Image (cartoon, rainbow, N blue to C red; front, side, top):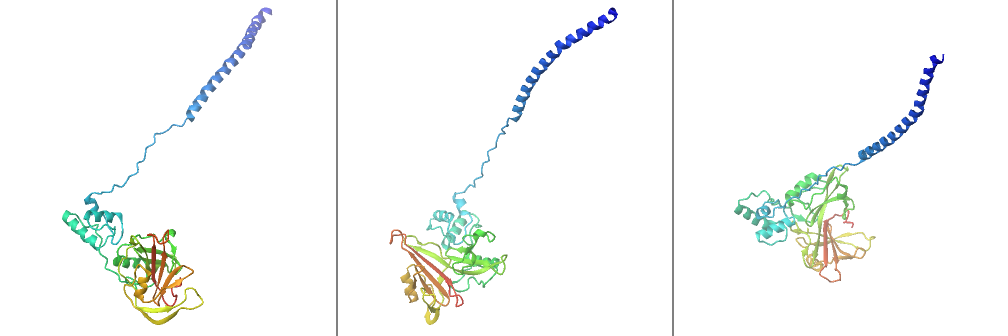
Length: 327
């Protein structure tokens, strides 16, 4: 029996010995192999997390090149009775008075220069048909509450292009009218403004009114260009007290002559109308009122008083017996 079982026992002992020695060795090798692999995988992860910086392409903004050559200046687009630096450059090129306003004299010299150079006259503005500017009267044939689009077409035909055409859909374009107090959009032709507002609907804009707003400075004269000769209509003097709201205005039989009576100085204007303007103590201004229009004069004496910065502001607009130009 010992012979039968002897070799098996010996083999078992050898196998057990190998297990005792081999298992710890295997665990030892596997452990350090894991640590080594873990370290490598960590490095791989770190390298994978590194942000690859892509080369950025520098965007160069396109700058509009201005052609200041004689040909470039002559062929620019110009607007009638609009003051600009482009017009000033054109006038200097033409060797005429360079005030920056594109009027009839500039247009004549411009056309002659274009013809001499053999250049097209596509940038030359057309001369407006002309609108009679009578304060309190109809302007360019526009009726009260005329649709804004129709009114603007008539104004551009008669007065030329406005200084700027605002966006009627932009709420920032809307202001409050000093004449009526309602929200309006003002379109300017130099010293002449036209007000548009909502008519029966916020989706329909129409013509509301117009007037003149300009200031005279001791050194540089009028601040804005008049788009035409400003006239006052023949009208009747209104007797009123600007410092007592309890007294209702009264239309008198005193006739006020009409014509181009506006002057830079108040005393000169009073001589033309043969009446004195009334002093409004609350607003520190002088006011003249008839049954057809109102004139407001405000004087800023400058800093220091009496300096060359003296500003003489004139505001003229139409009114009627229904509102008496309440402001």
